[in-house]
Length: 64
Image (cartoon, rainbow, N blue to C red; front, side):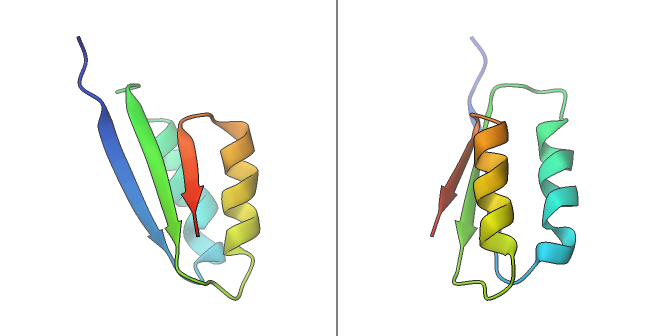
């Protein structure tokens, strides 16, 4: 039985780096992960990026 690993990514106005960060986590060799994105009121496009990636990979959960 593999252990579930939670990766928590805090987000605040990081649209410039967010896609690279998410792609990196999604490509890890260990597959039994959940990716929790916590957006703390970003005023840039970070929220839209979070929502898009939540649709791409079912391991991603976005929290506002």
